[in-house]
Image (cartoon, rainbow, N blue to C red; front, side, top):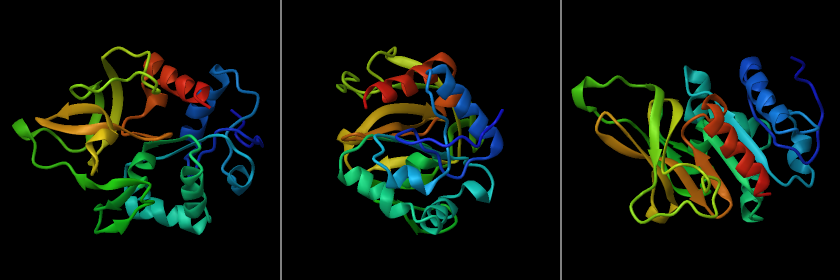
Length: 223
């Protein structure tokens, strides 16, 4: 699949592998987008309405520190923060969600974008010697008393399955920012975070079948 399209006011992605770009392009075309995803500074300099960014969470390429370094080298860290300050919709996926936080503790302590107060830490010792990283399908459910109405999860079942691959988890400082929870190895953790128009998904919607496609469609429709 060709991946060198140029697009404005589109969904932007940062630091993708070729395979990841093609996966999200498939999703984008299914949503009948007329332009394709592009790793480009022009995207954030333009009057962009929304941004989708994610990184892998495997090997050192996907580490918190490496992800932040990648944003800074490209001159994108401050631009992402500007997006948030302007209350523009942002969707961070997997490591992209983690980078929204204040601090990350993968290979030492690193500063994040500090858009959502909190930290990113490694899974603790899990029950029954459950393996880390978590790789595969798992459930996502709402915290007690929390409604998904008027969010990108608004039309989804109360407990849906999504595809995860990660060793580190989101720990928001503000419980109201926790939109979705997941349990793995006896550890309940935040798998969906929301602060205003900023969303973070610890799972990969582009690998989560119809549910994942619906989440991306809902994000697109929220613009």
